[in-house]
Image 1: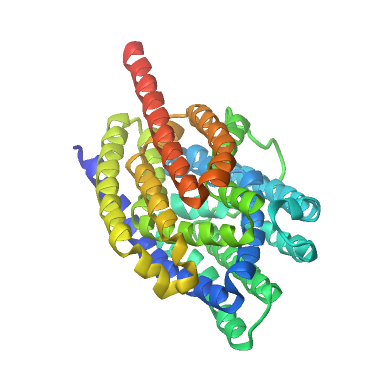
Image 2: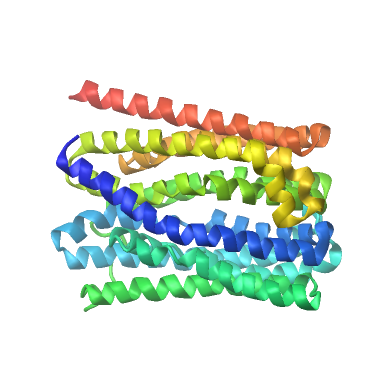
Length: 436
């Protein structure tokens, strides 16, 4: 391994370690505020809270352009070469993408809550609350600031983003639990957490730009994508890939609510929360990997890209497998301890969701590699095919075999996605070798 690759690997683990510190705190706090809400509301009302929050997150993820990826893809070279005006145009493009996402998200979220709320399993009298909660999508949509902080290697600042959101929700949860508050109170505190996290990361990003002299004479007008060939195509492709990814997270929860009710949706979401918490340490390598791949590609060191990806996949996969064993032997006890005995039926589903997450961790370098090599369209094709089959199969299987059947479908989808991305990457690398 070359010195630059070794340095890149070191930065990946250093940055992932910074994120892990904040995310570990966040994982504990997240379980805390969810446990408070679950114990205060009970399984049925907690399911309503989960459905409203999930719908807002779903809309936010669907309409959100992955502007952070555009910042890394088109901003790495201008930043490294000191081309301030070119870099500022990249930032302006990211900000415009975020504004489009925020406006579209709020509009779709409010209307969708009022029109489709009952079809998703929400009680009729909760549609107004869901519509008001959809206003927080404006705080969920922006991503340009995240890309800037990643490109500047300011992962220490990023590590606190989710922890701040969870801390606000935990404080509100403590009050809500003490006063036996209704669902509406918890919606207010959860929304306040999202807004607080957005304000924090926005201030940090713009302060970093100012500290580096990158706000001077900022060009707010002019051609939007000058010097960024294929920028819009890249933005739409990465948005489509992320949108398809929500089929396995938010859409799955909404499907459970629509097919078998809010109570089961709450159980599914709790299982997902535990599974994500266990797989989170390994997944944190992904945001740390993207900037290094972008920098390696900008410098022409594609061999280093391959080495970094392979090592990250092996290390992350091995660690995630150990956590799967933890879920198998201690998952139900953890659920009972944190959420209460009423949520113990979610344990088998949780183990299956952890297994699906582990498959994804083993394959985690594949998508960043394809995106960094300028082929996000390949990722979209794979995810589109898998998502269509998954969404067709999920309601049928859940209605017949319950939540455990849904977990099995999730595992099959994770395996199919990993295989499809691997074959796409091998095909792309084969073409590159043939061209050489």
